[in-house]
Image (tube, rainbow, N blue to C red; front, side, top):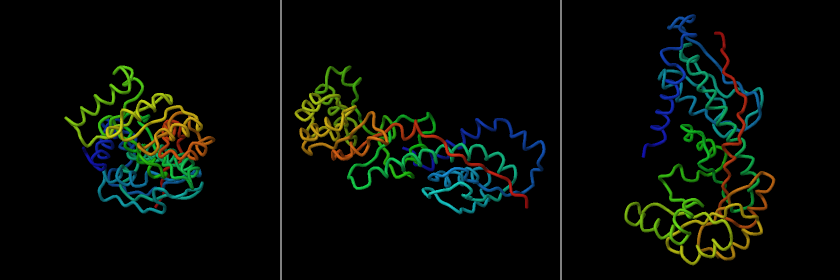
Length: 286
């Protein structure tokens, strides 16, 4: 598996190819190639800043000698009117990278800001906040990084790093017991490092899994359970498995779910419901 920097390098390469094509003709047509410039990243909305390190890597991808002076870092609280960083580089570099930098930082900051709101609701509870795979294709790397910056925890990154038996897997397999047994045999033969998580839809599913999954299943997902149903499920599970609440969890009710003592709460909305934060990259005439 490629590491973060390798994946980010490929993301930047593909994103610039998509945006620049055969050239940034707006810049090429009116700015001399040798002209140096300075720009500042202006914050226009309160929130949690995310994507500063990514922005620096984008500028350095085009111009390794570009100078990025940070005034704020990833994870910092930001306020309207503040400056996150300044960049000194070729004007061509600044203008060619501008939109990619802003797209990444605005999106990441929106996710980090929403994630922070959720994690603050969990203060005082043992429950940890997870993201999901409900991400933008080809941008998952940075969306999940933004969740971490906001104080959340990444769930599995993709289909390859955990077995999660959801409702459709279970139905196609002929039931929870069959699905678990087949998955367990598979990992023993092929991928013994993989953990198995199983989605349950009601207390009867939980009972079946408690009876058939010990020593095979690591975590039980309690999908679309009410807090009262989760409390009942936790009594059945009795600490034998990790537990995860999922489905219909919002800022208004997450505290009630955490109060049950569930180990994890996953919220797809951390990513797909986040609103981008308003930022701008403005030229400084020097």
